[in-house]
Length: 223
Length: 223
Image 1 (cartoon, helix red, strand yellow):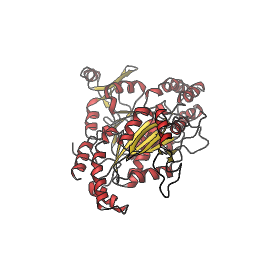
Image 2 (image 1 turned 60 degrees about the horizontal axis):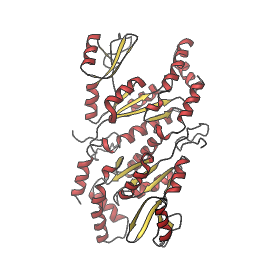
Image 3 (image 1 turned 90 degrees about the horizontal axis):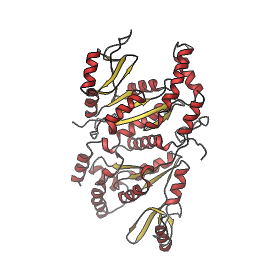
C-alpha cells in the first residue's frame, strides 16, 4: 500500500505513516443520539465511511439502492451467508439484514475507516470476526427523562411506539459492558468531541500504524 | 469514592461517572519534543499531575525539593526498594532515581491521572506493575535533521554532547514497538492534539469508568 496522509495530518508536505483502517461501532438505545453522532462524524471526517448493509426487505419511499441499503433477494442473501460473505447478519420480522465483508476489508487495507451503526447483537458477531480492527463505543443517555424527550421530539410516533422503544432501551443498555468505550450524551457537542477523540486516538495505536517499522528504520539510517 | 466531574465535563450540573485514574507515560529520544508536550499537558489539564521521582543525587542550583525531585539519602532509597515502595527505579552514574508508589496509587484511586516523563527502561518496569492503568505513548521526531535542529536550538551544548545525544537517540527509538501509541511530532500543535485525544479517549474506556454499573442501574430503574 502506498503511504497516505491521515485525516488528522492535512499538510500535504508531511509524509504520514501508512496505517490499517479500523472498524468503529456506535451502539446505543434509540433516542440516545447515536444516529446524530454518526451523521456528524461522516460529514466532518473524510477518512471514515458508513458500512452499507444488504437487506431482503422491500425498498421504502425515499430510500436509494446502494446508499441506504443494497437491496437483494433471499436467494442472494442466503448465498452470501453460505459463502461467508457477511460479517454479521440478523433476521427481523422475516427480513434479513447483513454487513458485506468485502467492502469493509478493502477499506481497512487501504487505510480507510468504516463506521457501523448496529446493535449489540451485530456487534457481538462483528467482534468474533474482526477483533483487533474493531473499536466499539456505547452511547448512553444522561437520564431517562432526557431519553423520553428525545424520542418524543423527533417523530410523530404514538405513545405506544415510544413506550415500546423505552421498554427496549433497558434491554439494550444492559449490554454496555461489552464495549471498549462508553460515552454519556449529556451534551451533543461534548459527546461528538468524545467520539472524535476516540477515533483520533485509535488511529494513533502503534499496531495500526503499519508503516512505523520502515519509518523508524529510515530515521536510524540517517543518524 | 464520591462521584466527581471529569476534566472534559466542566458543567457542574452534570453528574459525571466516577472513574479510576490512569498512568500516562510519554517517552521519546531527547529532542523529539516530549518535555514540551508534558509541560503543555500539565499546564492545560487540571486532572493530570506529574509524578515526582525520588533521587539520591545532590540538589542542583534552582531545583526545589518536592517540586523537581524528592531528594533523599541512599539509606532511605534502599529501604524504599526493599519495601516495594518504588514502581520503577534505576541507577545512573552512581545516583539512584525512582518512582514512589504511594502518591501514584492515591491519585489513581481518586480519579486523577499521573504523567510520567521516563525512558523505555522505566516504562518496562512500570508496565510490569501497572498494566491496565498504564497508557504509553512514544513520540518520534519527523526526521533526523529536525531532531538535530531541536537539539542545537535549545541549549548551549557542545557538538560532542549533541553527537552523543544523537547516538543515543537510535537506541531509544528502537523501543517504539513497546508502546501503545506512537505520535510523530511533525508539528507541535498537532502532536499536542494527538496526546490530548489519547488522554481523552483513554478516560472514556469502559473499564476505567468505575461508576458505570451504578449509573446504568439507576437509568434502568427509572424506566
